Image (cartoon, rainbow, N blue to C red; front, top):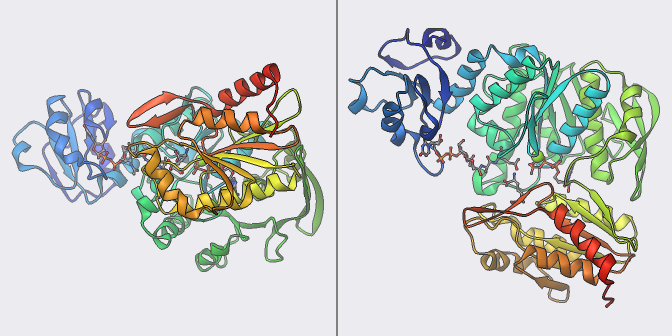
Length: 501
Ligand SMILES: CC(=O)N[C@H]1[C@@H](OP(=O)(O)OP(=O)(O)OC[C@H]2O[C@@H](n3ccc(=O)[nH]c3=O)[C@H](O)[C@@H]2O)O[C@H](CO)[C@@H](O)[C@@H]1O[C@H](C)C(=O)N[C@@H](C)C(=O)N[C@H](CCC(=O)O)C(=O)O
Ligand SMILES: Nc1ncnc2c1ncn2[C@@H]1O[C@H](COP(=O)(O)OP(=O)(O)OP(=O)(O)O)[C@@H](O)[C@H]1O
Ligand SMILES: N[C@H](CCC[C@H](N)C(=O)O)C(=O)O
Ligand SMILES: [Mg+2]
């Protein structure tokens, strides 16, 4: 495609060189540049893409998009395009490059601190079961229905995102569901994407290493709502969880909006779709659903009160996309669940082990309250805090863990560049001294100890890593999968017996 064709998608500040050149690919990493590429350089957190413009030119990039044109290279037969924010421009250019794929899909974007993956999986299931082929992009994998790869980030960079959407269109999808992380909103990875429906789940503390304050974190969510409403299709339909105390912040932006569904798992009267009489046990969740003055009975395979919230949000999206509520409700019972979220494993003697992805204070608290309602003899929790991430959430997670579980085995969860002991030190202030806690750096050892000490009426809960298949330590990704480890240890428990304490 010619550069001139792409120029319509953004406003360049300056162009040096030929605009009639042919582009053969879009790229934001010099290490991956191939001849004819359009290379986007931006200042990141760790380094500055402008430093790699020379390398991109050596590899025969045809066009360089950047915020500062380096004079030392302008004599070359390369075209320079100066823009204010190259990263935001990447999404817009990529959308044009791939034929505006999001215009050809009913695309649902899900944002919020917790529940994005679960809500997205459920929406996709409900759409597919009602005949709408649908791709999914999020934390677990990017599945275009043509190809499925495990994801390295929840929301891909602009060019990768548009390519995935393009693949969905090529594969004949009518819809797509995408998790929209706060990083992606802030950095403009979603620019050029047309969402038919946007969902807001909730907001609680996370990612302060990146956003610095809750206000800035929250602003990213508000920006998503504004972005959706400014969409080219101008539908900007939204589903909002009104149980979240921060939802009121959006109220002003949403005033008078017709295409909005408000949901409440607490039966709030201001919600248009609400749940009441929730009964949750370790096998299923049943509740009443109220919509348009009618009451429906629902039975869902998703366990936990918080999952009623996710279910309402998913149903809201399917309603906005024109699917009948009763049919969607009838499908809830057969939903196979989400890898690594509230996943149940049983030992031969009946011990229940739950694997879950809770890695924030709110998620951990909701998870443990739900497990308590299953009335186990004790909750034995294995959990850790990620390295190179929000340090201030560590004592808070440790407090929730030690307050709400009976025994806690604190362990490692992707220490990344940090020392596991240092992470433990950040967690310690949150722990009540009287509590039964153990500090075990090796995650498998911690899980083993939990499974060995458990009685069959206890619940062992392994939190934080969910579907992840690695343990990241000092830049190395070691294979590690809670699900495989738990399965193996439950088997060992059956074979070698249980040490009762
Ligand atoms: C904080 C953050 O968003 N980081 C991502 C971001 O990094 P950055 O912009 O700071 O990039 P940088 O490493 O400083 O490099 C700047 C530029 O130089 C380029 N470069 C760099 C080196 C080189 O040799 N050549 C070169 O061209 C890079 O490709 C980049 O374009 O862009 C990089 C390239 O796309 C990503 O690899 C990196 O993700 C890192 C791995 C990451 O951990 N991100 C997490 C925090 C993240 O994005 N998480 C969210 C939220 C998850 C959730 O929902 O909980 C997500 O969407 O996944
Ligand atoms: N609506 C919710 N409110 C609070 N906690 C939730 C909610 N839904 C899920 N959780 C908890 O958060 C964990 C992560 O859920 P999920 O993967 O669906 O969220 P996410 O927003 O995609 O997270 P991430 O941003 O890390 O990808 C779950 O394992 C569960 O413990
Ligand atoms: N998307 C989140 C996932 C955290 C998962 C947890 N296992 C950890 O490594 O802290 C992040 O990158 O912050
Ligand atoms: Mg997710």
